[in-house]
Amino acid sequence: SSSSSSSSYVDHSHLYNNTYHPQAPEPNYTDLGPTTKLNLFTAINSAMQTAMKTDPTAIMFGEDVAFGGVFRCSQDLREEFGEGRVFNTPLSENGIAGMAIGYASAGGTAIGEIQFGDYIFPAFDQIVNEMAKFRFRSGNQWNCGGVTLRTPVGAVGHGALYHSQSPEAYLAHTPGIVVVMPRGPRCAKGLLLSSIRSKDPVVFLEPKILYRSAVEEVPDADYQIPLGKAEILRLGTDVTIVGWGTQLRTLQIAADLAAKEGVSCEIIDLRTLLPWDAECIIESVKKTGKLVVSHEAPLTCGFGAEVVATLQAECFFHLEAPIQRVCGYDTPFGLVFEKHYLPDEKKNLDAIRRVMEFSL
Image 1 (cartoon, rainbow, N blue to C red):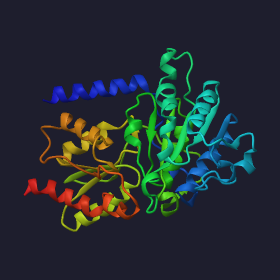
Image 2: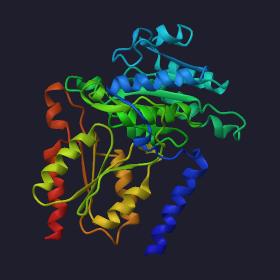
Image 3: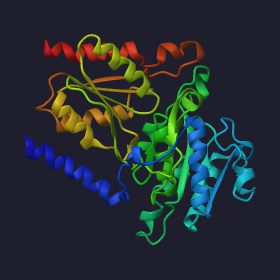
Image 4: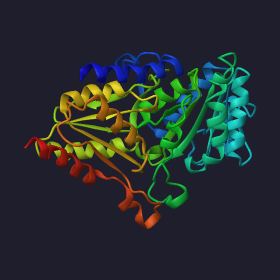
């Protein structure tokens, strides 16, 4: 059983290694010097400012970004770098993505903003058929690895049907692009700098509810966090809990509640969904024997299904309980139903209790 398990994982990793460029090591935060208290949007602003200072070819564009954008992520960048490097575009997501691909294919660094993740779908032809495949159609003679498309995603408390969606699973089905979702300001700055400087095109998903609510001490220094690597946020022995983006806050609350019942949870943030760090999750589940995967996007064909399928194959003889998925429901949700739709800490605590029943 161990040989068949390892061979399937090696094949999985082998495909990633032939698709994506290698990454720099994880930074040592204690060596990064002074910090400043930032929220998510100011950390993203700091990353773009750093990128544009260090790369004269870097430009930033999108709908309303010249005055700072609807969430203020590009605030003051036009004043600092000029209207030739930070500028507004027409209301055309397809055009924003296409322009980014064209500029990057000529050797520049393009940071495009899609104003809301719900409206990234008109750009899917450019993302799926051009951005993801540009390098491969030429045998690496040309590429558009300098593209980063940023976009806010997820529920925000009042977004309703058209400003609350989580499109990560659609994107993660597209080999050739990298899909990233940070959980807070400190990792957002490092991940965005890695994304902008990556030799692979990146779609960077920003949980909009965290723009102002998530606040952390963020290093002033220029630092990068490797793409494709998960992070263990809390060590535990009884249950492995996996999530990304906003959901990590919910999972930490659920784990705190479980701890009061004597359950030790290991919490893992994927950070990058494509390519994702299967090895980190596999090693954790081999230790705990139990897995809960949670995300805000709908259940059916959500990215959690990929995690579950892989872990079922790789850890079958280590599992002590059925894997649990705690996700959004398979339905569009209006404003009044948002609190019922979200996979909150109570739903996740119930899932933790269910897997623990098999240890009794």
